[in-house]
Length: 368
Ligand SMILES: *Cc1c(COP(=O)(O)O)cnc(C)c1O
Image (cartoon, rainbow, N blue to C red; front, side, top):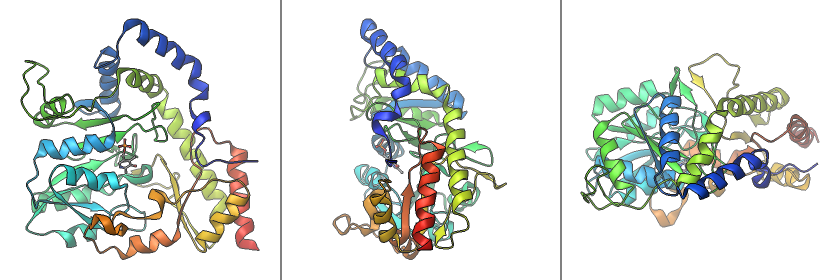
């Protein structure tokens, strides 16, 4: 048995016929840029998330950059973000003219509320929690810090479509948020794609212009220096086709997570994420199944020999650990995490037998 970390060729296999029909339909209509399929997807996603505005954009990195541009950062303005994230989160702040300040994570691998407060300075403008691995941070305490210090709250929700905190969707807490539709993300398209969501009319007006060369959709006048970062109409059509059945995918991910937890909870060298069956404020959608383990490198080799694919998130480095980027941050918990973290295969095409096989190999490794 071979268990790839992510099965790129198998991921969309079941949808091949449906996608072929969409492809022909879009070709025949010549509907490529900002056409009705995009508008329909944006409306359906807005309904799904219960948010006022959704704009399809080129990818989540551009989405976050355009959000910070819309908010307006001055040189020296600081934005606090968790170092355990994709470099893209911090890059968005830099591209918009600000300074990203890295903070530590907590035991659930998400931004630590305590370290946010400790990192606030005169120059702090915003906080960007990352709703990592399909889990939403404790947004009550983050919101109250933002209120107390008058900071802008933006969510990096690239990994969190459908994830909730106290029944409220990731991406709908702050002034705006970005989602990613990279193929391996929860809702993936056949290439790059993303969305910006917001309840703020002024941010919405700016994002709509920024993604399309700064042009006003009403007058056609160029009102600002913009980007070319639109979600392709064809990709929007592929995404819309999957959005209807999206909750089924989420259910499957939660089942896979539960199976891993049931199979591994007795292994004392393995630290697991919270179980989806635990009654709590969090509804986790398991973009990833990230564990901490002892003797990580040997375990990873052991699994590789059994042809089980695992990954160290972000190639094994938190953002403050890239010397070239010179990102400020004191993150002891994150440093420890990156000595021990590993992501097990987690997707919607993995079978129960494959999950059992992974469990069996991990149990075997620590028993011998
Ligand atoms: C994937 C990801 C991004 C970037 O998304 P793209 O659509 O590839 O630009 C940003 N932040 C996090 C946390 C991600 O996982």
